[in-house]
Image: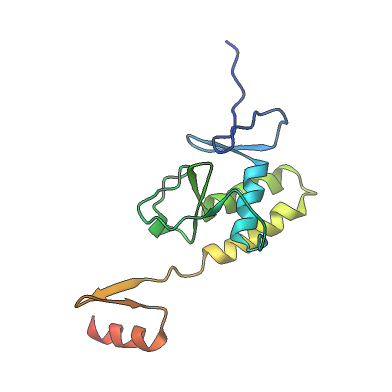
Amino acid sequence: MIQKSPDCSFCGRANIEPGKFVLGPERCICDKCIEQCSLALLDFSEGADHIFQTSVLNSQRCEFCGKKSKEVWRLLIGYGKHICSECIEITNDILGDMDASNEINILRAAKLSKLNKAPIPAVVTRGGWVISTQNRLLRRVLDRIF
C-alpha cells in the first residue's frame, strides 16, 4: 500500500521536501507556516501583512494539541485554523534538532520558551467588576479577600 505524504493542515502545501514538515497528533504543519507563526509571536512582523494573527476568541482550541486559548500564552489563527504558541515553540525546536546548523529555529524556540512561561494574566470578577491580577496592589488586596 502506498502511503500518501502529508500536506500542511494550515496552508495545504504538499510535502515535497523531506524534513520540512512536523507531524502532530492529527495535524501536520510546514516550515513556512511555522516561520510565519513565529514572526507573528515574536513581533518581528510590524508593518508586514502576515497570514497568522493573534486570535482574540476565548472559545477556540489549538488544532495541533487541543489546548484552550485560556491555557496558553497566545493562540494564532491563519487559513481559518488555530495553533498555540507552545506548539510553535515545540515545532521550532524540532526543526532546529533536525538540522543542527539551523540556529534560527533554535533561537526562536528559546525566545518562545521564555514568553510561554510568562504568567497568563488572570481576571477575577467580584460583584460585577472585572479586575486584572497584573496590578500588584490589586493582587495583594485579592489575596487578603480570598
